[in-house]
Length: 246
Image 1: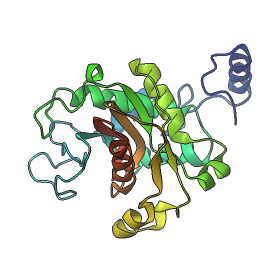
Image 2 (image 1 turned 45 degrees about the vertical axis):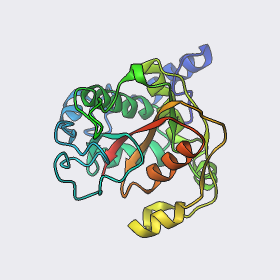
Image 3 (image 1 turned 180 degrees about the vertical axis):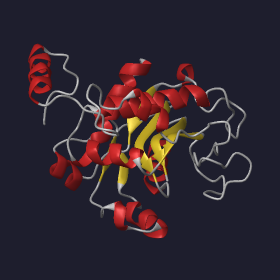
Image 4 (image 1 turned 180 degrees about the horizontal axis):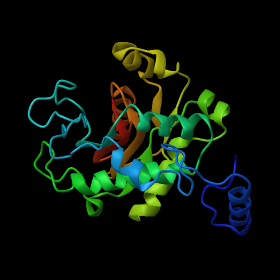
């Protein structure tokens, strides 16, 4: 269903009411009627304990020794909400490929919860991994042109807008992504090579402290390429956040 995901306009509210009558909302995890993700399924998510996560790449158990990175990410910190697989994978797939755009709110809410938790733990520099008062704007890893044409929307733009609504931060829609192969079939080195030079920042970002968001971090190639693009245009710092971490 391609409906106004916010329901904030009169037409959107009416469409939401009609859609609920015709296709009642059911939980993505257990098919229970009422919510897109019920309380039981929210609790069952493989939440990442930020205390033990790698401050650099967001891996679930890299606080002391990380096997997923060499502490060489250009971002000041990375925060991921849940481990990828099972229900989180289903949420992402249904959101992106089955057009359930209301899930943008669910993913954004999970990310906000984890950012709040991460604010209590230090980055490699000793400062909090996230501080909303020290963040100027939210930006997102953009979809490729082919993905946008296939879906009819940029899924991470929707998540970023929801995250802005929940945190009060402004949106900085500054990144573009040139033609590249679909990352899902590529290995670690292929992903990095595929994205080399394909992500660009359109505006000067002198001194801005940015929160960069994406849905899933696998090898980190997309996040790292986008981070480099933002820093190259003058951003003072980039903090990364993803819904899920492989």
